[in-house]
Length: 580
Image (tube, rainbow, N blue to C red; front, side, top):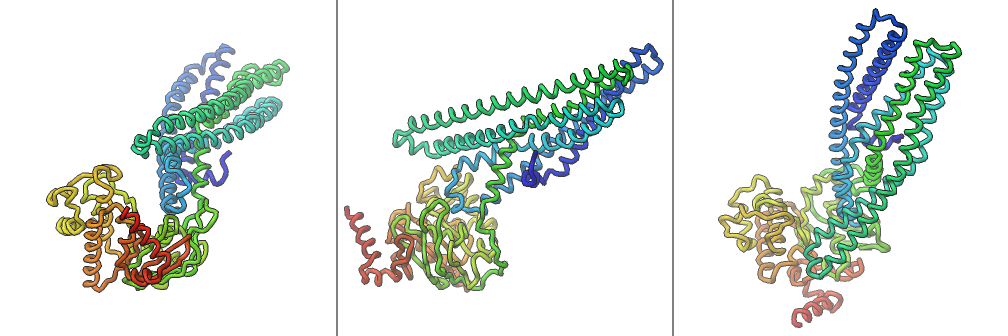
C-alpha cells in the first residue's frame, strides 16, 4: 500500500487519479450489470420462460458496447495521470538538483542522477495511473459484491469475505521482498547507467591511455550484476504471481462450490445459482487486476522512494533567516567561515576571516586542494558554511534570494559550459538584447577572432560541450558571456588557465576596460580570481595565500615577496618549473 509521502509525491495527478478510480468503479458497475443480465439469461433458459429473453439480450448488447468506451476513457486518464505526474516529479527533481548545487552533488555520479530523472520518472505512470486508482476500485467493488452475496446467502458471503481478506494479505510478505529487490534492481540499473555515461564522456581519455578494454570489462561486470538482480527479482515476482493467481482463481471456485452446496440444501434457489457464480467471479476479478497493476507499477514505487530520498537532501536554500533586500554595496565579509564536504573527514576551509572592499581585485592562490574553489562556491551558495557566515554589503548571504544573488555575482569556472548553438546564442544567453556590434566589439577585445573572422564569428556554430573550439577559446567565450551580465562581483575560478601568456594579458585588458566602462556609469566591479599560475594575479590589489584551508598570508605581490613566506616559495617553484 502506498504511504502518505508516496501519495504526496504524485499530488499533481490527484484529480485525474480520482477520475480514473470513478471510471474503474463505473467499469465494475457495468461488469456487475453484465453478470446480472447473463445470470438472468441463463436462469430464463433454465426455466424455459423466454418472454423477457429479447429484452435481456438487448440490455446485454448495450452493456457490451458501453464497457469498451469506459475502458477507453480510463486509459486516456491513465495517460493523463502519467503525463501530469511525470512532468511534476521531473521538474521537482531538476529544481532540487539545482538547489543542491555542485557541492551537494559532488558525491553523486552524473549517470545515477540522469537515470532517475529520465528513465526512472517514466516508470511512475503505471504506479500512479493504474495501481493506485485500482486500490479504490478493488475495495469498493469487493464490499459491493459481498453485500450482494449476503442477500443471496449469509454463509457464502461470510466465507467469501474470509477469502477476500486473505487475498491481499497472503502476497504481502512477497511484496515486501519484491519491493526490496526492485529497489536493488534500480540501484544496479542506475549504477550501470553511470558507468556508461562515464565511459562515453571519457572515451578520448580512455583511448589515449589504452583503458578501453578495462572499462569494457567493468561495464560487462556491472551489466552481469544487473542481469543477476533482474532474474532474482523475476523469480520472486513469478512466485508471488503464482500464489496470487491460486487465490484469485481458486476463490470463485470455492464460492461456486459452496453455492452449489447451499442450493442442494435448499438455501439458495437454483436459478439464483447462476447469479452466485458470476458474483464469485466478480468478487475476485478486481484483485486480479490489482495484482497485474502492481506488477506493472512496482518499479515506479522503487523510483518514487528514490525520488523522495533525493528530494529530502538538504539544500543551501533551506534557510530560516528572514529574506532581506539586495544590499546597496558589495563589500564582502567572511566571518570565521569553515566548510566541510559531506564525504570529507576534515574541513575544506576553516576559520576564514576576510574583508574584500567594493571594487577590489583579489587574488586567491595556493596549492591544489587548499580551498580556493570552495571559497568562491560559497559566495554563490553552492554550499553554506559549516560555521560562521558570509555577508555582502552587511547582509547575510543566506538572507538573499536566488535572484538577488544572481544579479550580484557571476562565476566563470575553469571548465565552462558552452551550449550547442552559435557563438551569438551562447553570448545572448546572458544578454538577450545585446546588439551584434556590442558582441563583436567584446569578442575582438578578447581575441576571439581566432575562432572565425569577426564578420562570421557570431554565426559560428559550436557543438555540445563546446567541441569544435579549444579550451582557451571556451574560456574566453565564457568570460565574454560573464562580462555581458555586468554584475558588480566577478568570480574567476582559474578562468584563464588554458590561455597562453599573451592571450591572458589581452583578456585581462578586456576585463579592465569593462571595469572602466562600469566606472563611467558610477558602478564598481569587484573581482576575485583564483589561480595556479601566479602571473595571473600578480597585478591584483591584494593576494590571499591559502594553505590546508587556512589563510596564511595576505598582501600585494611586492609585500608578499618581501616577506619571503609561502607566496614567495610558490613563486620560486613556479619559476623553476618554467625554466626547466
